[in-house]
Length: 430
Ligand SMILES: Nc1ncnc2c1ncn2[C@@H]1O[C@H](COP(=O)(O)OP(=O)(O)O)[C@@H](O)[C@H]1O
Ligand SMILES: N[C@@H](CC(=O)OP(=O)(O)O)C(=O)O
Image (cartoon, rainbow, N blue to C red; front, top):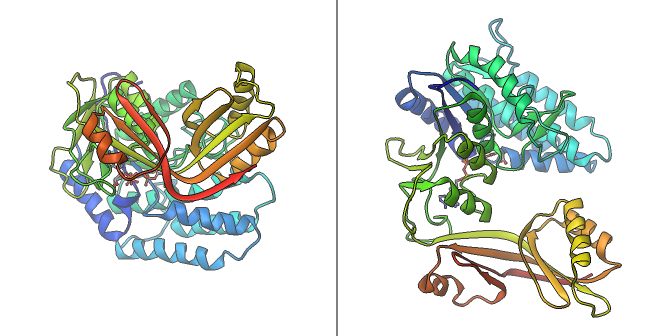
């Protein structure tokens, strides 16, 4: 780690680089608000490119024609580069590829997929979104382009690479510190690499986490994530009216909000920053001079209730087949199977002969879970559900959220009230 670094890390997500106009806005922010000191800029894929790449991958992996979608992705990126007057040429001064080369590599990858190895090949394809976006942004800013895949070392957990912190810290300190002295750097969010040089990804929406990894390893002074909202609010303004901005908030409050599903910050982002006490600033790229939110090591009184909504949920209930009680042995089997198929528990509850978990719905993973546990348990599940959490709840906030909703499961602790309810219904028994 650098000693008392002046380094600032900026992270720009998909919305802030969605088109040429957005990238011009990004350039203005860097010029007008970027510090005189070292600056490391983390960029996600443009707009909804990652979703588009997931669709492309799905088509290619199932042997369907993907040429039209690939052509659309190619045209989009080349058109943005043209609108920004970016010459797509390799220069001697940089190891950066050209857009044309990257797009060709993407086409080759898609054309040579093999059956199986779904998650591994997913990473090799979907990571192109960040490679393309960073190339365009680096050229627009006339900044250095850095491929972070050889530096952010992960294990082989495809689609959710686990960071090897000591190796990553050594590599970043050795390679990036000297480059920072030469001017701003633009690098990819969301991606990393294995010892053998294969690309991994860090989990959907993982670019915030990349910013935290870089800040932690390089001892940054602060991280700023530029969003389309005024800061960290007490609820997602897309779903709730009368939201309130927190001018400052502790790491602990924020980590809990992110854990419960406040999608404005990836849940893994906070811990590395809290460990090294690096403040995280959430600011609006639409109003860069506005205050935003400062997430740091602070104390504050009880905050206004925060509302967190997580859709795409699935409630799975396991019942013993012979009316025996749910025991620790049963739970061990259920938890083991959930870990095996990589389904994360968002909420759980047990009764005498039944145990229920609420997880993010994945048809593929649920099917694998059923295959493992069907013999031993009677399993019921509902999909198309929503999980709501109220942090720092009071009676009016519970009333506001539960009114008119049919609650399938409900739980409260001293500060947190949670419930699962129907969005649209799909019921089944395995
Ligand atoms: N508590 C919250 N405060 C602010 N925004 C929130 C909150 N919860 C969810 N959001 C949503 O997060 C979005 C910004 O995050 P995200 O779309 O992941 O940004 P990006 O991909 O550009 O980094 C906002 O547009 C808002 O709809
Ligand atoms: N592009 C990746 C990673 C990411 O973090 O994106 P964003 O910063 O736009 O949420 C995704 O969409 O999952």
